[in-house]
Amino acid sequence: MVIEGGWITDIDSSRPPVPEGATVIDVQGKTLMPGLIDCHTHPAVVDMDVTGMAEWSPTYVAARAARALDGMLRRGFTSIRDVGGGELGLARAVEEGYFPGPRIFYGGKQLTQTGGAGDWRSPSRQVYDANYHTPAIGVICDGVSEVRRAVREEVRRGAHHVKAYLSGAVDSPSDRVDSTQFSLEELRAMVEEATAANIYVAGHAYTSRAINRGLECGVRTIEHGNLMDESSIPLFHEHGAFYVPTMVTYHALARAGEQGHLHGEVGAKLEDVLDRAIGALELAHRSDLKIAYGTDLFADMHDQQLEEFVLRSEVQPAAAILRSATVVGAELLGRSGELGVVAPGARADLLVVDGDPLSDIRVLTRPQENLKVIMKDGGTIKNEL
Ligand SMILES: [Zn+2]
Image 1 (tube, protein in one colour):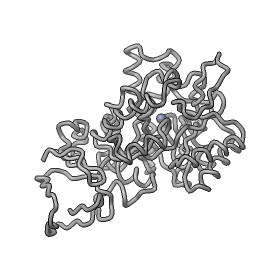
Image 2 (tube, helix red, strand yellow; image 1 turned 90 degrees about the horizontal axis):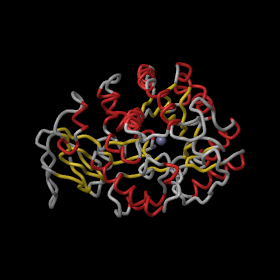
Image 3 (cartoon, helix red, strand yellow; image 1 turned 45 degrees about the vertical axis):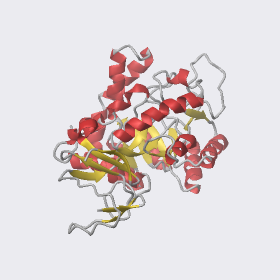
Image 4 (tube, helix red, strand yellow; image 1 turned 180 degrees about the vertical axis):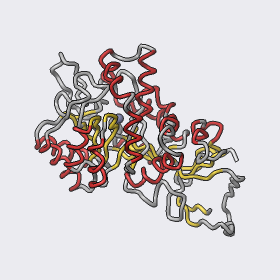
């Protein structure tokens, strides 16, 4: 394989002549594969106290996010989708090499209705700080015109997608997991504005009631979906939508809860969704949905980013999970052929693995030992060969 200027230019099993002046890496019979893509991350949500963090200095948060990004790259993730909190500045810092990290596809703030999952005020708090540059995850918008403005603000800041809460969340202070959020009018306006800018809407949703409203309005990716039932399957197929499960975060939160790091109401909501996650994935796999790899970890939990492979292997074969973390992720990002494949014309985002992930997916969960080479855009992040 020949790499030039960050791109794969030639692959030839008959050993192409080595271009003059090239650096040669002999992979010694190990597995060569594309860099991984995590389609649901929050590197800028840097503390378990998410509501307290919303009042921190954004530069301090960025410094802590840098460490999370570096860790992701060293686990083999060369591209990520940030679905809340990360924005233009973080993506640019990586792009220009100030922070080592994966390429970031970001959506900026998550759109939330008043009292929705991204409204992090405690129930007794009236004031909402609308300053965009506070490290809060959400932006509150109510009614069609505020929703349109919120989408246009994200488009103005270069968003690759717009993320919206279609239902309650586990980590939010005042809403219910089984609620639906935003009116159909608001959702349609959101999709219309995103589509106008050639981007798409990603929707956070747990129940089929919330998922189906989103899909019917044109939301293109469904995040989490733990409480999904059969009624959502035809809608995914009809709209060509993607499903992004994030099982590992619930397991990580449950462990944090055991150590006393969770508020009481969060722990109770967690129980509802933890056990159902694997059933939703099994349903999605059996129904041949387009499933992307997502983790949804934050604060100090990023080191469990590769555990999602192990959790999914209970119901999916290794090849399907690897596709989720490569080609399907690339398709979701609108970068088919450029990311998630080892082929001429693709970016040289590459891993050399000691072991065969197709026969044992767990080899990927020990990157320090088993990732011998990590390359992003043809640049060497790690080379032990
Ligand atoms: Zn998330």
